[in-house]
Length: 93
Image 1: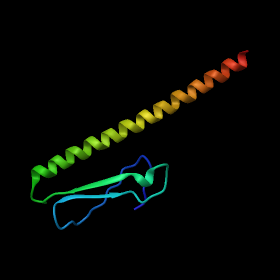
Image 2 (image 1 turned 90 degrees about the horizontal axis):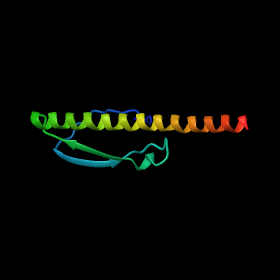
Image 3 (image 1 turned 135 degrees about the horizontal axis):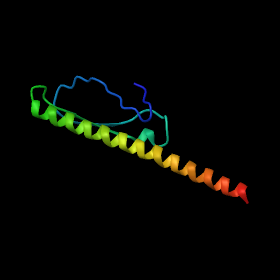
Image 4 (image 1 turned 45 degrees about the horizontal axis):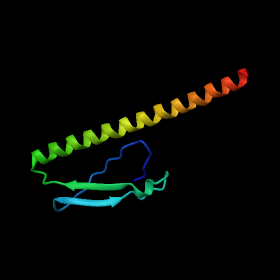
């Protein structure tokens, strides 16, 4: 599955036993992206409490990623505005 920076991907897996499984991103679409860690927690399909906890954690992680992306965009806009204002000040001299 290809990755797009700033987007969440989802895939369905059939894992035969519960536990934690680790890996890393194999895409080379951006700086340090190939070193992005992946952790999968496999839970028993009948364990509803574990499923609800996994959904809550996934929702929190998605919010954290969205907040980080919003901050990155706001910071880029702030930097560009500072450059623009500096250029205006330079032209007024």
